[in-house]
Image (cartoon, rainbow, N blue to C red; front, side, top):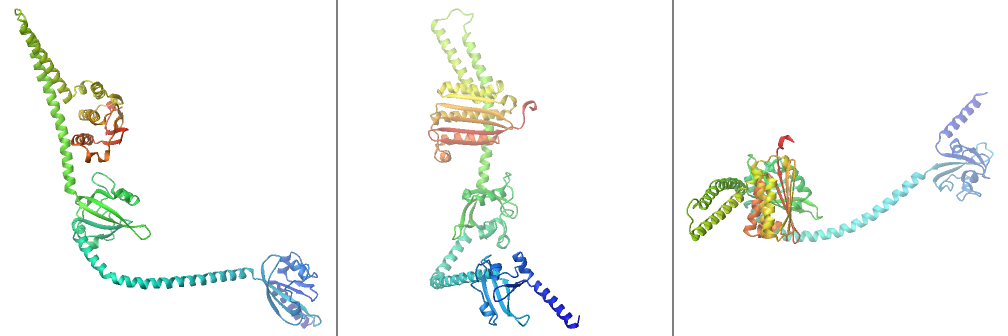
Length: 518
């Protein structure tokens, strides 16, 4: 083999490699549409080598010549480029066709067919977005022109009111800064945004030290002296601000001094109705709170002293006066024993004196009983309350349903027993005077670690919330007395009432131990 033949052979191999590596579909056909060559990429696409078949039938599944056929151009010596949508897969392709004359005797058409569908779709999407953006720009431009005109008008209007606003702001700042009230503002996370001069003096913080700081940890302690979790209360404030339009809570100054403040809180909304921050105005009620606590302490001491004095008077009445009266009655009844018969008038007078003495003895013993029921020592709390209910029902014709459970297991201190007894006594007296009830249900149950007292009537009911403001002094003292006694026992009192339905009093008293450890 000569050198020229070897070179030509290598060139053909190299050409085959290049054609096979090309990513496009390549085919060669004659003027009569017969396929003479398909590259391997096209063969893999069709699934077989279609050489010798008609191009429009093998490649495009058509029964006649393609509408886009460019043979007329190519076989006149032109190179022709076009884009078509293949009916077999509905994808877009770029066709580049050119004439070739490999053997210098016959002309063939060489076509490079590249898949441009994704590019075509991307261009269409780009055009769609571009058209949309152009429309948006036109629309926004029109809107901006209107807004610009409106802004120019508003600027002119604002200029005319700026002077008035500046004057109003000056007066407002003078009022806020010089008032004798605590005024502060904070955002929805609890960080201070405004702190007036009075607040700075009251709490001991300078403006630069408090602005941006969280309220909890500065003027609000983590926990109150009572143990209340104030951080949790503050979190509840943000979730339910409507509950805290007016509230009182313990605060703390920078030097550690505990103070009480009555707050009025108002949410500030933006133009969309969303809460932007809060305005709080506070008044120092520390002295009032302390005075109230002192009154509360004195009231409890008074109740204790009252029960102690009642106990002493009851004992004196029972042990001394009642005994002396009994002795005097016996003496009057035996005055003329072993004596000659007396005149009927004298005997009648002596009998009247003995009868009056007996009435006095009964009255003294009843008085001693009401001052300190002896049944508490002799029969215990349950039997004493039961007996009182029986006597009360007999006197008032009010039916009383009394039930008790669990108290036989517990050894109660006397001050707990006497106050529970007084609570029942006070409740029944209030029902008799004001409720117009016909039945009362009383439940006294020990459910460790609490004693639960429920008193429910079918009376006319009353407005619980407004009762302390509108009720007569007698009614007011009855409720206050019950509240103080419950507080003295570290318990809780809840009153529920519905007009023409009745009233329910719920009392819970903590207990520390059980009898015999059971």
